[in-house]
Image 1 (tube, rainbow, N blue to C red):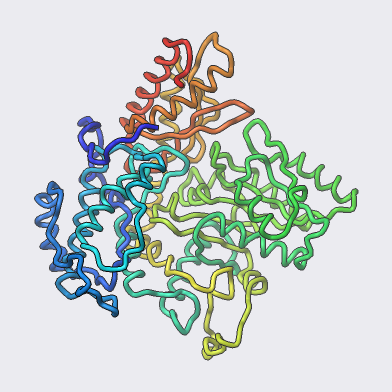
Image 2: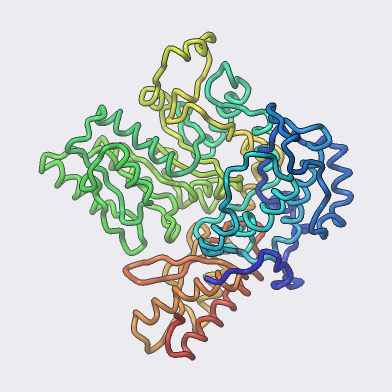
Length: 555
């Protein structure tokens, strides 16, 4: 993969038909702001007056390579064992941070989606001895801008269609900064009663949206992997009393890899997971599942859990949830649904239709840092009975005896794996309050419509074959290489994705369906336009034509 300088801002000037960051609804404008981490040494947030003064000068500052000169310079005399900055230095550092963020915001659309240098180059740039003495803050920020943030895939870029993108919003960015500044540990009621109540409220909002009963509860975690692990740990405890011998779990061949990692952590052998072939729509077939359960019971094994998908990473497919609910209740099995990206679609009418039955499952994972537009990281686990998590995970050592002084206190450390927990709920709570639910609904609907639009573009071209229709913001497709063997066509499609990343205009990813390489686009960014889709398809088609003209894929 070729490396490119991060400063190449003007290479892909958008056409006049593109929506600029300053256009659109207030919600879409705010979503244009990138992820901010203000975990600075003692640095407070700027007050409103100072921020307004800053924003009045942002156009002038955004074009300057060095925003301002900071006062701290390398010197042994600057060592402060309190790990504090002066008020002036904190203010200057805050201004420098906001300048970098707004520069990123103002120029993101014109920047390459991905910059990725080889490991050896980054070793040369970033490998250094332990810093015994203070360095210049300006030098550290320049290194951040050039060598660290200059070598990432911009998950918030409107033309990032790879994997499941992570478009975020400015309100949640600021909320993350506040949570870090106040150094909240959302562990127990004594240390974080206010934040704990906010997490309880926000979890209950998600419960209501997903249609789970009032008995349901849950918690925020780092992402889908930990949510799946926590759910399967509860299923193991409640269904098996932690005795895993002879137990069997069922899923389709489209299940996420985190399911199998979780089973390994929980002490299951690989053969205890029945990975059933999916049907032609890449869904878990209920008839095959029912037969597999019968055969295992007849053989003396112990079926205990089914894992279903609410939006697969490969194609966006949703398993037949209502049928699976009925089967699992009949067979007394735990039904866990992995809805890491897709479950959020329940907010809109199209999503509710395909997610019918979601509110009847035993456990559900979903990631607000995907289709609820939150900065990384925030995942979520919901369970049908909130007491199940405490029954599974509560461990109370003597040094936490003081936290139980309040009879109605709630301790999230009793409900999951983590004792030390950050205040993840704040960003989702704040953005839902400030934008309102309707804005989220419209943003999710926009992503669904864009995938359907992309499908129509492919269907109206002789160069492409749609391999799976648009589902929950994902469409898969293949460039046609008429008269060429499948191996040639597979290689050509893989190289189209690679060339797109190298080119920088857009990014997309590949996967394999029925043994063949396909391209896929995930269109959940609310800032993406139809013009972005058309121009991206045009780029891909040009690279595909080059392969045909050369009579061999690129090497």
